[in-house]
Length: 327
Image (cartoon, rainbow, N blue to C red; front, top):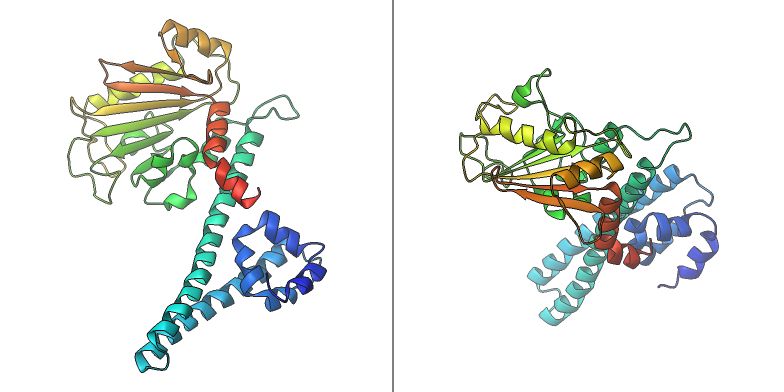
């Protein structure tokens, strides 16, 4: 790696080296480009202090890289170096920048692993025999009582359900219809076109599609013909089709005959829910971990996603990234 690697290996036998490699891959490029600074980190620091030191060194790396880029271009303009020298040195700089960008990606991938671990923890039975409330899982997937204007897309985890959802810009989470606390609310609502794919405000246009999510407490098993996520989803669609429901700014959420609805219930498929799904003639997914159906009259596709399915599918999609990072 470099002539300083033996120094790092000696000083990082306990703590920092293992921490960078296994827990903080976003700093791995510093092992190559900032070995002397890393060798100065005191051994046996707490993880918080170690993070502080690594962030300090990363900031120094970023500053140095920016200065080197500016100097390289300046030297070329002044004729200090010729074009062939510039190409060679530029290639070295690109390698360094790519390493830094790869580190940022590594940090994001590591974050995904943490979220999946947290999801697995959240669906386990607690010591008292109960399960986490649905609000616990809701906040993991998307913070409650927020909209897309409140948080950046990187601060939510809709990728757990569908990668495309991570880039929608109009999303409301636990916001009641008509912005009235006494009114009904869907857990997560996504309005697609003209809002969801841009920063465009609601200007009275009909929406191309509307996505509604409902999350239920893990292992809930008290569903009946009147109270279940299927009927609940259909009731929300019926309310929206009246063209009387307002968004958080008091503007009508306009629905037309061509507006498509995508309805998702995230829950464990227990015996009472399975009975209702059979009654409504739902089809089982090939992996037998979910159900789906298309309601032609409502122009609605509805899918029941078990927590196990969400976690397993997300692991499969991200496996190659986790393997590359060794996590």
